[in-house]
Length: 272
Image 1 (cartoon, rainbow, N blue to C red):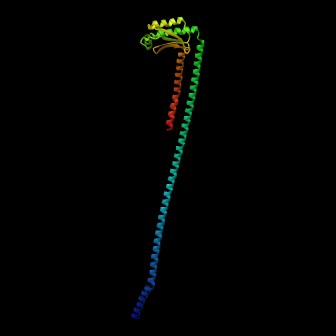
Image 2: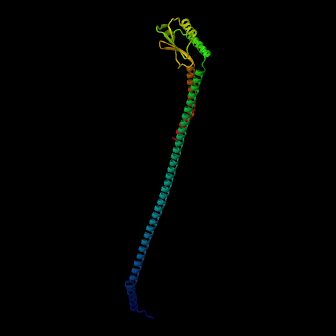
Image 3: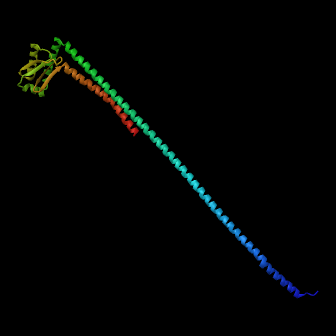
């Protein structure tokens, strides 16, 4: 069988032309469309990935912001709670301190008032007791008591001689004026003589004596010379006793007030 090379060549040419035509008008548009589609798909996928990444970033940002907000809210809430608790404790402490201070002030005022009342009652009672004692002694004074008072006064004159340089001794020895002798009762001539003799023997003086009656001297006798006085009376004794009793009560009140003052200072330190 003979091969018709012309026919073969024509067929080959036709095949090549067909292939070119197919490629030019069929495969190329299809490949172009496929490439375009793939490019679009890649772009859409890239856009989707970008959108997804943006969404994830936004989500992470939102979650971080939410966490920060929650942390800040919790911190502010805790701070507000702590501040409220501290303020409540401060107000309660101030209220307790004010209440304690008011209670201490009232207690101190009551104690001061009670002490003042007790002191007033004590002074009144003491004054009444000594007033009654003065009146009673004045009413009960008799001749025998007057003799004892005069004897006691004479002994006091004699005892004053033990201090020759005292102001009283100097005044009696140096006076040129009559020496007044006052008594709560009228002295007898014998008593006048006893007093003159005691002054002469004790102070070696012949000074003139004047005798006067002074009812204010409750059962007592006194003499004055040069501004100095020598006296003995139940009135002076009662006054001395009254002063001693007053000092005793004052010392007692001071000792009772001491612990109260210490307690007040302790309370002030605690409140501070």
